[in-house]
Image (cartoon, rainbow, N blue to C red; front, side, top):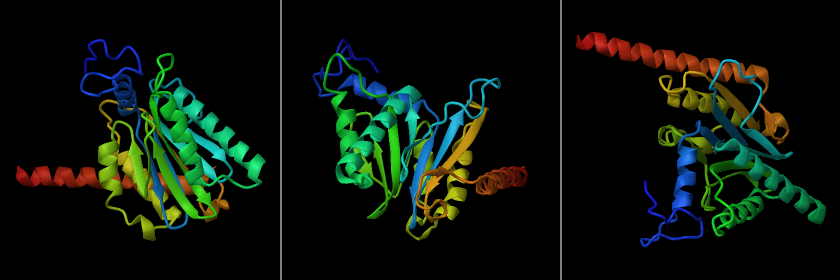
Length: 256
């Protein structure tokens, strides 16, 4: 991808109507670990493939799961420092809404405010677009809700969404799920399976699965999933991956 001078500013269009700095921001998302979010009948589940570059890194550092408000969570794919800035902005918006209305901010209202904030960084030459996609959701008075804000500022409401280097493969797996009839507890297993299935061991050998949720089991508050739920989901994902490998080996032996 070459901007031919039209990529020096986010406020400059190319002759064919492209904004190259926004496209470069999407590339930053595509080079990051996969993040997914699933809206179930009773809540929202988040899962992240946190990739390590060294065995010396502390496993609990640089988490890609953020708590925005007691009923709201967020995961991001792309540049982590940019994601933290979006999370901090989201927290300020949630706090401002509570101060003014004395109530939890509706997820759709937060989506509108965040998408406007992200889009503003594509308008001026002295700033650059955010190099991340933010997936956030929770349970408000209208029920479970899930949205994704992209680097351009465009946002969508989803039953299930994914971002990152394996987003296409993850979306294909999400589309197979009956999310409207699935509980959040069941979705943790499916989310773990998708992350493990989409992980590329050849390029990124070291990674850590991160899971959080907002659902009745957490009193509709955003928390990391309990250790026993996490262990069961991760075990199911590893077993499913092992079964797939066994099936592939059997098929190869049959062909021989």
